[in-house]
Figure (tube, rainbow, N blue to C red):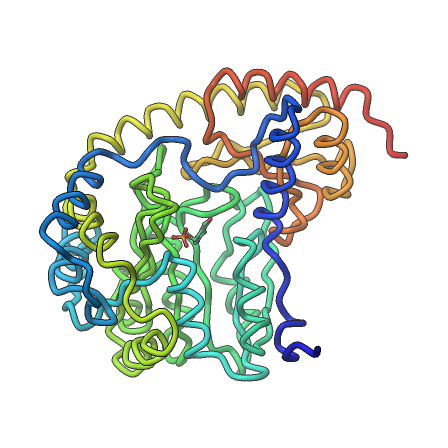
Length: 391
Ligand SMILES: Cc1ncc(COP(=O)(O)O)c(C=O)c1O
């Protein structure tokens, strides 16, 4: 049996692979501490669950329109206006099976063989994988700690070629928690003026911001609004990762039509009950719950940042948002895969190697777990680093 050639361009997600291995070790009775997860440890708020129960009791088992019900599309428009001052019509919005499918659909609809997609590194693991699957070429812009791992307008300018089709922006970012300031996005917007480059702005961690209020990419100028697809969802901010609710909004009607067509021939509508559950979260009825999660995440972040920076050989910037630390381990071992594999084998601590995010010499530590585990994990990492020998 021979698989289609395009499958050779796709690898399994490194984060999912590590978490699966850690969970298997845990299931076999080992005292594994898992810091590889990309999801909040909090359960979905009751307001969402209750909306789903009501929807089920009323009978909502039928297909819905491919982009989503009128009610959910209107709720998304209300959210985008209220939180981000962005004016979209329901026809400009499509709901998807998580933000991952929003990104997948947009790239499928936009990227042809040899088109270039600019991706600042470190990046979310799936971006270059999806670009590769579409036959496109990822053009990686390496960032560093001096800019808080954010791409500058000058770097962007230098990376643009006549083949550039798409720019990926991720703010609040995974794995570094970086947040682009309004002025930084304006400068990026100026560089794009006069080009036909489409911006896919992944804002899935938007509400988990601690030190800076995030600015929606599309909100910084009329020109940016016209070229930007705002991508968001409820996996992280409403603790609904397994529900698979994402969405995209853009004024680019050809793209919206193409994504609806693509989705009509693949998943069609997302689950009707998920759409019903999303409405209260979009309308802000889960905001107190988000505030509670944020308070916990800030406490854990501050503890973990201090504990990691106290370890000789490791250092980390305090993330402005999301729930990850991106830890510099170059002084111990710049081979992050070796570092993380040994950390899991020897100390039963699961973290994700930076190489998966396009940056070796770092590893990602998720603080989306209880403080006690974080304390234990940091102690184990300290012992591990103290006795670390390369080979
Ligand atoms: C930056 C980023 N974008 C998108 C996603 C995917 O979100 P969803 O679960 O809604 O598909 C993730 C999940 O880890 C992420 O970290």
